[in-house]
Length: 193
Image (cartoon, rainbow, N blue to C red):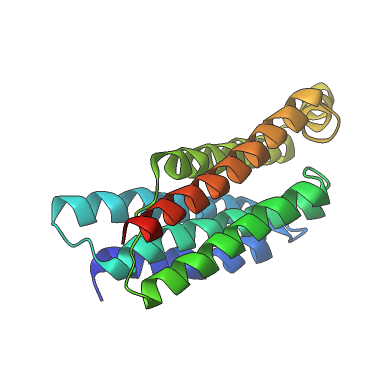
């Protein structure tokens, strides 16, 4: 197994660890969950960079890397749903799209058809991971700062703000779009074979 694929597996393993730590009532463990998430996202960047630089791109890696991303973001969105930051319907749409695309990609791989991750899917993942990072920073900042007015502003943004809802809606729409794009690309590739 190549080093980039090992990093993808590490990301998959870190995902439930992140959720377990994030759900803890202990402030230190919550902060540690942020570090775990940060390490996981760094492995996402590094495995791709390493695979391209040292020409260790494999069919398994083409599948495993985006799958690991989906696992990490899904666990983070589950955490956001549990904390009432994200509505259940958005979580279901994002998780269902990721599950369906993963199953279809697995089936395609079984049939010998490899579809690389599209540009829009990479953008979607980048936006999702950046959003998750920012929300975790705000949640950590809110726990560190003892200023009540700062806590109110952060809590308003996380739980009541139209801006946060619109950001999540944009992420959900982008996720749906990238899933539909996958179906159209897959259909064209199958028709051309």
